[in-house]
Image (tube, rainbow, N blue to C red):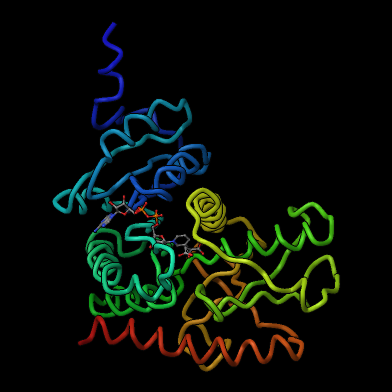
Length: 315
Ligand SMILES: NC(=O)c1ccc[n+]([C@@H]2O[C@H](COP(=O)([O-])OP(=O)(O)OC[C@H]3O[C@@H](n4cnc5c(N)ncnc54)[C@H](O)[C@@H]3O)[C@@H](O)[C@H]2O)c1
Ligand SMILES: O=C(O)C[C@H](O)C(=O)O
């Protein structure tokens, strides 16, 4: 038996796909990309899963492809294969780029990740301009505006289809609130608005469902870098996008999107997803005094991060 050869084939079977959507993960060999690939291979709404990275996708693809779920998996490695990875995709998820090390801010990643996101989005504009794009790469507050500018330049920009993934903030907030209240985190729904960095992450604890109250000490949420919980959050968000595409009703998630909820061009808040991406951006709702002060701080930092992203593409 040649056991070794089982994991060395590059692409797997190209037929027998279940009906469903075509999803690409760009950065699929990374700390987020690999578990995200696993979770998307398990999603019954996915018929074809393309795994793209600049390294290691043949092995990851062969490994994931052995899961006997409906999605057909294909691997693509290196920029010459980017176009094939993207052609025909309904949803593209981008966790490509460097993560931060201790002591760094998410903005410290800008210099490397801005260029990576630009190249990938140029590929999307060319090969699957109608795809729903989920941006995970940090700093999300700038990489989403970068993606928008790239799509504008290519003439393909549709703000309804570009979404920054902030689900991890919601997932964390639900977990922390559940722990404090001694409730099942699946029953908790904390809207987290603003953006995805430092003071721009604004959990609206006054709107927690079921209603509850916190002391200011309890309300200090923690933070940290993540791969596995991020993969879970990204898979949850992508699943919501796919359910929207399928036509399910009442699909609402927080996301960092082109927005008129504030005077800023981008802002994270609850959005309703549908067949064409974002169908409605929901208002912020009533904020308490603490949250109103937080919102002002968040907006100041967000304005700079957005401008930095826009200038990067237009310099
Ligand atoms: N939005 C969020 O909530 C959130 C949460 C966690 C991490 N992140 C961000 O996600 C990104 C990835 O994190 P990670 O821990 O998976 O990092 P990682 O280094 O483990 O993986 C990144 C992958 O991207 C690949 N890559 C690099 N350049 C590429 C290119 N040009 N095209 C395609 N792939 C390329 C790398 O080869 C690597 O496999 C980081 O920027 C991190 O800060 C965002
Ligand atoms: O903190 C990071 O740099 C990664 C990610 O944005 C997170 O919130 O865990």
